[in-house]
Length: 80
Ligand code: FES
Image (tube, rainbow, N blue to C red; front, side, top):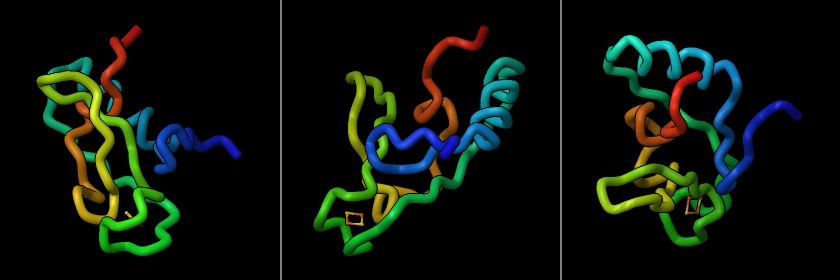
């Protein structure tokens, strides 16, 4: 399939390929994530994605907390 379905939301390689260089250059970058949505109102948690917060990893719902996220919180692993 090629998409990272960790947490249910699709973080595609193309989006990641855009976000990582921006992060490496210190540029602000926002990503719009797609996810399969069963309810679309925040009730089922079927669209969650793991993001990095100041207090550690957290699960956010793409349908109500996104779909736009700061790329640094979604792709939080160090750049090579
Ligand atoms: S689709 Fe149900 S919580 Fe997002």
